[in-house]
Length: 288
Image 1 (cartoon, rainbow, N blue to C red):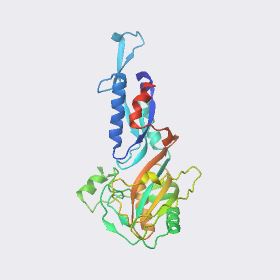
Image 2 (cartoon, rainbow, N blue to C red):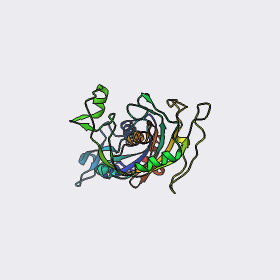
Image 3 (cartoon, rainbow, N blue to C red):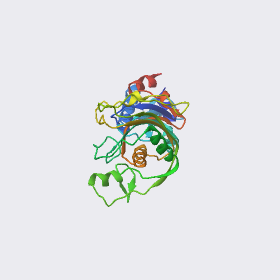
Image 4 (cartoon, rainbow, N blue to C red):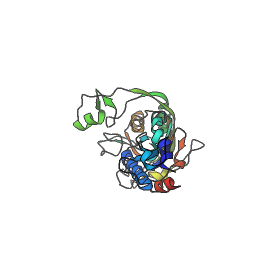
């Protein structure tokens, strides 16, 4: 690949690791591009003008770079990094259908609906069965009205919702919006065992292309209390869907609480996680 090819447009699918922001992942790719082609910090690419090919007649073009669809720091998976003219396709890519897999913990809630904040409340969960979870998940499919999390980038009166949330302003509310959830499959259900630890998952793939992958959702930082039940899921949804909000709504539908403990994006439009590069593979990709 050459700088000219990048200018003409390239989509680089990345497998974003846990703990990285999407902005940091873009920065890592920028650094790899600078090093691979000897570009300056502003990614200026010399391109010969039509009337000559020597250095004196080269024009300097800035190599644009951005990503399609932010992933939260605790999420992993497919992040599309668009370079050059491909940045013009970012809105279309963001509008594409998405597939997520992950883990939801039942019987508790957090203020942001995931593990960015500690648990704030506990709820009864002894009545929850796998059949009850599957029924509740089915009720959250189709075109549904969803309230985005307060800890999100949704704008309320010109300000990001997370800014109000950090200020602890209880008077601010987010209006629900319509989103499309095409499928919400429960791929594993783990009840606590007698010693307080979650039992081995009962993995039941409900989609032909769903691969049991609960081993991806171990919690190395130990934030999830062992006595709480957990479910693994596979969700196919449209643009604007917050998986954290689906986790919250699942807990409410179960007469309990719930929060998102792990999330992995598997697909955006025509791109899948199987096509994605690890961040340490980008340099080799550019030199190929």
